[in-house]
Amino acid sequence: MNTRILILAAAMLTTPLLSACSAPEKVRRTFALSELSGQARAAAKNGDDERAYELWTEYVDRRPQAHYAQHELGLVETRLGLMDQAITHLTIAHDLRPGDVSYLEALADALLKAGDIESMMSHLRESVEEGGEVTGYLRIARYATRAQLMDDAKLALRHAVALGGLDSAEPHLALADFAHTVGNTKLEQAALARALWFDPASNELDARFLAIGITPGPSLAKDPMVAYDF
Image (cartoon, rainbow, N blue to C red; front, side, top):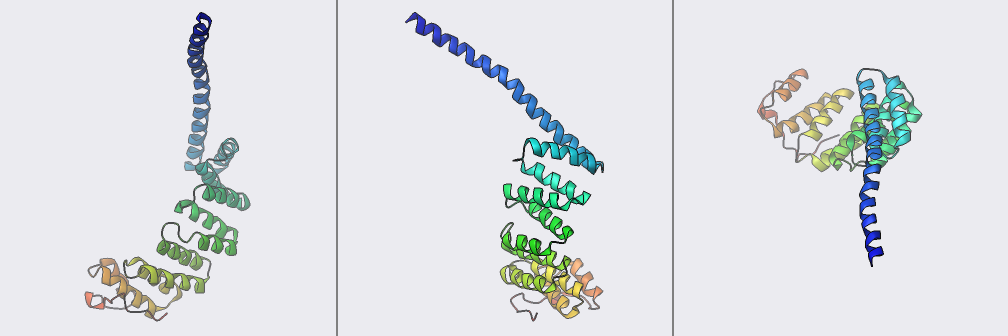
């Protein structure tokens, strides 16, 4: 009986001791990674992307499951023009953290910069529900416009207006922007008129009407339930 008591007592004394020995090592490793990320962010902020690239690469090598590190490394690589690497790391970041719109758009930006328009559009379509479906279609329209895919942009805007045009001016304003880009003044006026329905006293909308040669006023507002011709 005495022997069993001695064994139990020794175990109780040894366990905290082992924990105390292992804790500093864990803290040391965590601190080293924190210091590494801090230095990497500082380098990027100071415009030293080469140094930021080295530091984030080391961080990702040591902790590949860190979505934020994969994302930061991908951003640096995009700025450096290392597009294959950037796309790889930004894809991993998005896969690790789906639903983060900033990660989603960083990957779309990299694909656009790399000229891989087909992959960019596939990525945007597959992630259309991230951040809300209306926002997703507006995102597709925005990137399609940047890629000069005007038919794709128009189709995405139709979806956005159909889904959210009765609840918000945002789809109508996006359509107005698109119409302005393609030089369709009639469509731009129609979209601004529906946006005006939501905010008849908008100074910004007044300025936009003036810019296309139309005297502004609340009477220009049009019920968004009235269908577009586009």
